[in-house]
Length: 638
Image (tube, rainbow, N blue to C red; front, top):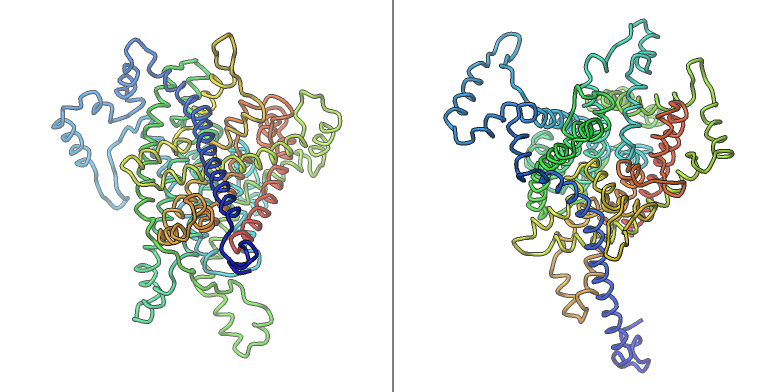
């Protein structure tokens, strides 16, 4: 249909009625954009800044506001060797002498490097285990991105979809899976016993190693997912140019591919450091107070001694450090936005077909090709990944089907019986599954518009843009414990209003709001870089043709950022399915508890049914993400 035919039907230009309808539509769109901005600001203020502010106010509640911070920072238990620096900040020469004395005690011998003892303190240990966890996550996750981006094999898309599944599993369930896999009577020792090897006390003798493995279980798939997307967008023409000029494959990778991957690797590493710095359930379950991080200690001070001011002080300091890392991450990401995506490397078959081998006259060379060094290394990597990722999940599934005397279905029969005959106050499986899926869909519906509004605000110009972006990324830097306590003391207990009214939010509405606040930063992190990378000449062209600013945004910018929206929606769905910390506080009845909460409630009383419910959570989550990823792929392909 031509432009004239869309007018008054006489072959002339647009009619006056068309013009009025266009103006009316633009006004409606502007009103919708303003309403979305106001609702986003209100939700952030009510569900994020107000609860966190309540906790922070507790830290300044003493006779003198900063006394608690001075006491904490000058205590070696909390800050280790830095306590003297905080106590005597002007004694620069004294501190330099101490540093030089420490380096003077370092010796290098045949047994390696020997260093003097260094007291880390609670904050130092938290950063130390986060750094080790980050190194392990990148080392395990990056080879997975290489395989997914460079090789084609049956099930590659499904495997790519499933990389997000560990990220959404409740921490308490993962810790139980690691106990079931690597504990004294776990799956590993059962397997070793078959070949005559005695039991290994892995968790008891080296809990820090197991904690790092558990963190890698969570975050290596995140690194894989982020790095795979970057690897698939590498400008491979530059690689071919470098090879044509004589560069070896290794040289082309180092000089061309690696610089394009570096932003994604840094993003995965910084996010991993943030998440592991704020770690809680895994360290508590595997290491306890022996390996206490700041988050575990805050929980301990709150639940064991009711020391709210001390816990709030630690939470404020922890958040300040996390916000600093978040700010550095945002600045780094902003500096990398100019990179232009390519089509990625051509994928080669990972496995040869049997017909090729049998029918080829050069069978020997074909077999040599199938067993080259790269494929042998990938096979070794697959074994490590299988043990680390499949082991805990397989152990959890086995625990659901065994009871110490052999195979049994009685744990699942218990779930069915609970569903059929359980009282209204008891936890049932079907409401948990229904609530999880409904909340996840509702979270996507709320978090995606919120993330879009924040993305537009954060990609604008101005000297305060970085600070605004950091403030809106607060959910990355605030721990689940702090957020949960703030929600409990604010919205759940209620806020007194004028006239004797109380403002209370509980149930499904509060849970969806909390999930949306936790999930929208992931939408922002997927959408904002794409919006920032759009060629503004396209927008200006649309405006010069008569489109309003809102219409140009919807028809040009939003379409070009569609892939980021799909990825952000998938992450929002994932965050909601696996969210536990705030849900366990807000869930009050059968209309609000979710699958992770059901697993936790069973775990406290019945280990077998808890593992059976965890298996149900695993199956529902995996199936949901395969569907979400496939639907997202269709949207991306347009």
